[in-house]
Image (tube, rainbow, N blue to C red):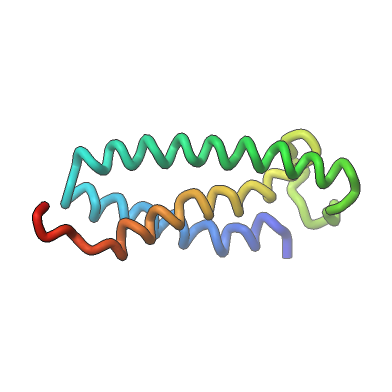
Length: 108
């Protein structure tokens, strides 16, 4: 099994949950959903940048190594693109769960 296939098994449900959460939230509060969407994009960019920096450091120093037969070969610096799936999943999964599990305010 390749890392890309393994990532897909976790990333696909996370993205599906995120899409569901945003659709449901948009029905409840459209203006708040737009600002939440912008916040998600900013957070995702920050997490991806941090992942790119730190993954390249730990791969470059030899702390982590990847089996070349299990990665796609596409890289950002030294980091295989498969390494970024975890950052994407984290950035979309946590806010999605927050939106789905949050109780509406009584005065809203």
